Image (cartoon, rainbow, N blue to C red; front, side, top):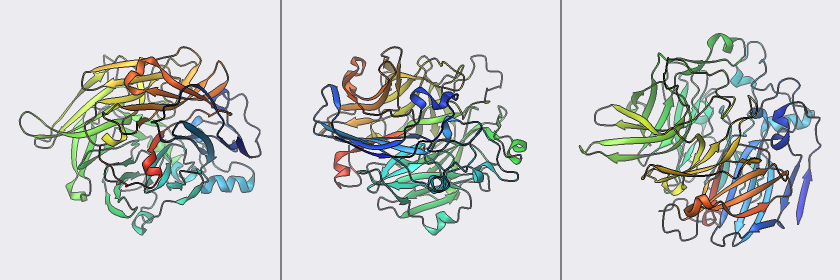
Length: 500
């Protein structure tokens, strides 16, 4: 049975490729529970897969970019072989204001901001980027930073903004970014906030019950464009890459990115609930990275503690001459000429030195996901989106999936051929799992050949065999960004932390 709420459709810019095909918006919020299944849904797969992404209700005249759309959550609930799909917009203040006026009142990232207004102040917090589960709620977030919206995991209804301690409200333009980290064992939520005003970054921790445990300033030399962070069992790692908004362009209300090869990348390592004077900075080669795989602590052969971080930075030319094409860096993913590497940094807490290097530069992958119970602990496996060759300058193509084995230094990939477009796919542990990869990889797939969206369930232990179940959805799931898996026992009100 399908229940639908129709939202009045708007006249879209049909000549814009970011509003066509698998990118095209939908105008219905539906609940569907009688779905066609190709294969068989595993009965030991129980929980919620939810993914965020941009779906504009109104398109502002002028240039439209994929990142501009209003946040919409798409959820698939698995329960002992049964499955229910639903989707709902995140009802941000900006979206509600647009609805009241019947038009989009906000400029996008490719449009000029009002004179004298910083882009961070003029742009709408669409809450379209990331989603996490914490303290019984889904948390929807925006990559530029802003209010975090709480969402009911059962109905996907927006409950309101994350309860804000007065100290958070006083950050003055520095607001929580997407890519916060949840420690599933303790239930804690680690976040960073950044913006164009001094001190340019803050770091904080919410306890499992949602109370603010820690909030400290992180002094940067100037405004930066961090995108992610990492945690270990005892530390958090914050990023300061040599990528900035061009100061003159910023004054004019425009985005124009400058990469400074003469600057080093810097990483701040701070005890999880530490103070500002406990921050330690580690230098590394100049690079830029969007997404972290994971981080953990290790003891080396000399008995020294090292913090290890693995991620997917942009590849640097083999004969690096100090340049990096950043013209479209943050506005495109996997565009022509843009590849990613699997890369590792090792920060020695005894010596203060950084050792870094490639893990893999053969496969071109991004959007890494791991078994969430290993967040901040040493993991063996990572499940990444396989980036295909692009068809247009501004449109990526998520062509398949890859499973990395960090212990063996190997990988297997699955690519079904032309006409399939994947989403970031989280790992879902099987009930009573016995090993790190005892479970499934779950994600949306746009089947261009049949012009329909599907949910693919793949046995992580037999990854190269492809999906064991394909669930056909009654409407398209527009291409989007980040996702999460919520274990069934957490949805049922189980303990906020769990041991692997």
